[in-house]
Every structure is written in C-alpha cells, then in structure tokens.
Length: 341
Image (cartoon, rainbow, N blue to C red):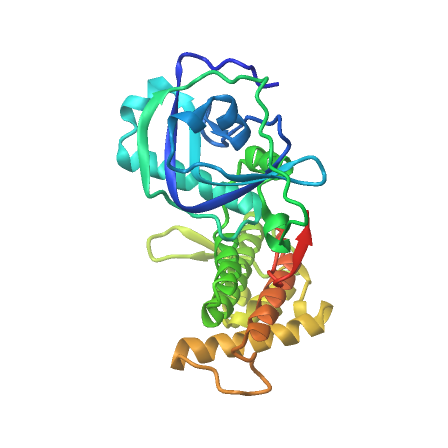
C-alpha cells in the first residue's frame, strides 16, 4: 500500500523527454512504483502526477489525453518522467548523475513493457524540488471519444500495472540483446528496413553468444563429466587453467552458436529441434552479411527481401530464436492494425 502523503525527506526529479511514453492505467492507481537497484527511489506514474497536482506546476510535458477506454482504464501520453527519491541524495546528484538515473529507469521500463518507441534519455532535467503530497481523492480521468481506435501495437505495449510490477521486481541488469531487439522493432515502425534487419540479427547473435558463454562457465566450474572434456592445463607461470579444448575449437560463426556449440554444451540444437526456424535464421544471417559487408543484399532465395515484409520476417525469426534461447520478453511486432479501445 502506498501512503497518500509523501515523506518530507523526499524530493522529485522531473525529466523532459524528446518523445512520449504511452501509459494504460486505471484512473486511481498506482501513483508510484519502486525503482529496482535504488533503495527508496520511486517512479511516479501519471496517476501520481495528477494526485501531486503537477499539471498546474509544469506546462511542458503535459499529458496528451488521457483517453477513456472501454475497460474503464485510461490511455495517456507523456513527455515527462518523474522520479521521487531521498533528499539526502539530491546534493550528490549532479547533471550527469541525474541523466544516468533517468536513462537507467527508462531502459528498465522499456524492457518491462516492450514499448520500443520509448525514449532512452532526457532533453533536460529540472533541479530536484520538494515532493508534493499525493491526494488520493484525485483520479486520472479520460475523455471519451466516440468511435476512437488506436494502433494495436501501441495499446499492447503501453505501460500497464502489470508491466510496472515486472519493472519493479526485476533485480537483474537489463539485457543488451533486449535493447537491440526493441531497437529493431522501432526501426520497422520508423520504416528503416535495413536497420530493422541488421538489429534483428545482432540481437540473436548477442544472446546466442552470451548463452554459450554462460553454459561454458558452468561446465568449467562443475566436476568433470563424460559428456565434456574439461582438463587442467599448466601455464608457463606455474598455475593451472581449466578449459575444455573441444568446445574452444568449435566453429565461431553465427550459426555455430545455434547448433554445434549448444549441442555440445547441453544437447540442444535449433537445427534439430526447429528446422524451419533454423532455415529462416540462415536467411537472416545471409541478409545481415550482405548488408554489413557490401551495404546491400542482392535478390536471392537465400536472403530476405529488403522490404517491409522482409523486415517483418526478420523480426519474427529473431523473436522465435530468442524464445528458443530462453528469452521470455514479449516483442510486439507492428502490423499496422487498429483496434477499438
């Protein structure tokens, strides 16, 4: 339960963003959620912003909407991010530190919601100021627009109470491959076909290599097994290095991290388990190589076309491979559809 009053020992930091975050919340909560990794820091939602009376205090970053939804919630767009934290930390929070706190929060919120269009930095931050109390009697009410419809991907990736729970509960550092995959989705929204395909391939390779490294570290740290060939190798300095020479001499190509290396480490192979996904991944790899090496990809049955359909295929293929590798993030691939809300 979040109290209606705010501790006088807290201040708020307001960041003005270059583009909007879209939110889908109930009209009366939650006003804020804890920020992981930063004790006594909170992210203030548009509900909390209304309950603090910040609409009257700051004309810049005013909420667009809110729009009433059929499920009783509201859809709002805001170019303002508000953080609440202990005033004892305000003195050490210079411009660089303020920017880092905002970027870290945005990155975590983007990954938790899957909102690819969310900005990752601020245009400016306002010097920390005393945090107003929450007035729980204030609701975030939306205007009703008869016949209104919104982009399906916008509705599906809006920040919701559920994604705020994911945001607040995640103690692990944000994963690089998730950032890159969301960049690929955003590139498709912006119509940048080449970037969407390149980033899709980079996201796959990033997680595939990281997964192989994690698996290798586990077998090196574990007792020797008949499946692997872990040995202690003497070095010139008299110490011993523990290695698996067979794994270290396996292929180092994009696809080796989806077939040979995971097959040796854990008995799993994308080629054997999901041959159609593996075939599409080969097309993604071939297209990526053509774009990266010569700046183009010639029409070829082994490559994806440099069209919106080809980029869609790249994103779907990448999402399937990331799922096979154990990634449980949800990637909403824009299809241009609209939905009544």
